[in-house]
Length: 170
Image (tube, rainbow, N blue to C red; front, side, top):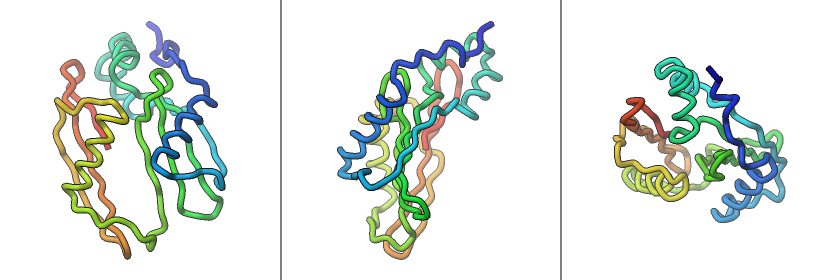
């Protein structure tokens, strides 16, 4: 049996993934010109362990190669000693952006969206940017935190995969 880690097809180099991340941030009108950056390869963590333990090495290997992205190039743009930073995860096989965050100081002026509006934005991101269908998904957790000048929403979905029975977007 071959470990799934040994069979991953990395089609994007670290530099190519960094370029994808920077381009994505520029499309969001977020400049990283004044920021230090770092790009690291993420090995899948909990998702990798879950699939390997529940599906066995061979089946997990097949799922991770074709359906469930567990590895990523994780790009981070930051200024030392400041909370504000950007993070973008890029699929090393497809080049798709898998996730994005923009951390801000708690008292930064921001949006005060309703949870429903935030959910629509998140679902649009999942389907159009991460290119993941939500057809077998359901919302399972949502929370909101009112900050001084904005509202922060955390939303999560479970996706019932016909072969594994589980998956999660956050």
